Image 1 (cartoon, rainbow, N blue to C red):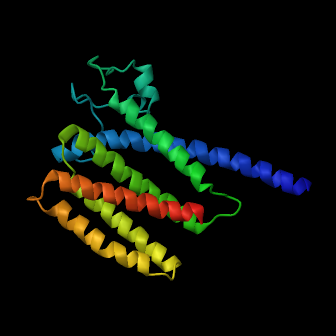
Image 2 (cartoon, rainbow, N blue to C red):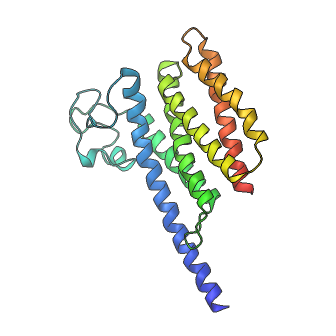
Length: 219
């Protein structure tokens, strides 16, 4: 019995570490989302070019880029030009942190007994939520679905479906998805199609992703 109690206490400590780590990952990714939302529509590099203030173009140093905390310590202003930083930065970073924290709690990953299906679902979740945050951010700013980001999301979701099919001998549910994904890809890449239909396709993408993750969580 004491061994069981010790194991449970150890599991709680490990879970706490996982939750803190996932929240940290969430706010770091949230910072990346704000960068991607600004740069992708401008066709600027999002991986190699250093972050800069969009008002004065001054390159930001490490202390300016700490998610959430830099915004608070700087009083919501640029350290160099003193212009106000849009609240969306801290909002997206915080929201992303909360989303990833809740996702980790729902997955209930046990480091003492790792389930690879949950690890795969965790990886898919990171890609899935990244797609959602960036697309919604760009949609809010530019009133359009970003084709390249949506294509990335569709590819990620298809890859996850293939993984689930390998685990599950039932092929019928995944056959239904094939024409849906083909239709979403066609709608997303056709410039003549109204933006409203692309938004509908994006909503279907979200629903399928949530449904498949839910199937893993309740299994």
